[in-house]
Length: 233
Image 1 (cartoon, rainbow, N blue to C red):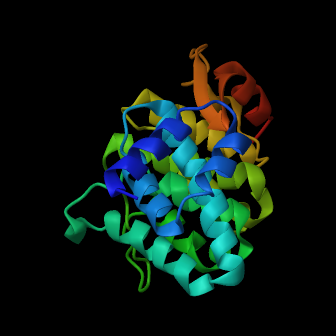
Image 2: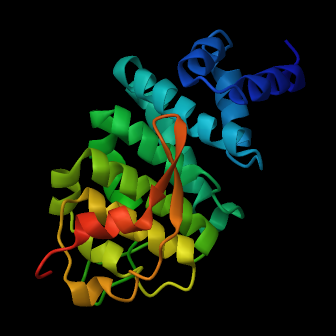
């Protein structure tokens, strides 16, 4: 089948509302064609197409990890390359897709989660403190969605990796959505923050629109603050 025709058909499928139906229809195409189309879909301006591609990557690559782990690793390394300065690209959608895959695959989470976390960290003074901090706010949003999704799914593991500290470093970000996503991610860790820490943000009574399990939710920021609020940090 013509590659362009396959891409068009898969993109039309990704526009549908029901995620289970999307994954079922996409699975009928050759895997290589699906993977190529999904990589392109991560850059699409249509939110449904882009986020459903993230979900499809989670299902497809986690399934590959069970039977063909090396093939799954190739996909993960491809994501890492797109986030590398030398690639010449920006890596749109890569953090989100990697996180979704790691939510579904314990093998790939164990092998690659430290790399995803490293994108929230700057280089340190000590040996082996090599961060890969992503500076562009738009890519930070995707990264924090990915980190946050993992925090809400595996809070103990993410706490053990020091994610609370890394997330707090985003509290001074100029981008409001970055701050909101960092606070949402923190709320998944079941940590408690002092009134002093939360005070600069509590005037925000807006909604955080976030993609969760195939649907878009409007989460009140006040509900996030309530979850984080406690007597002391």
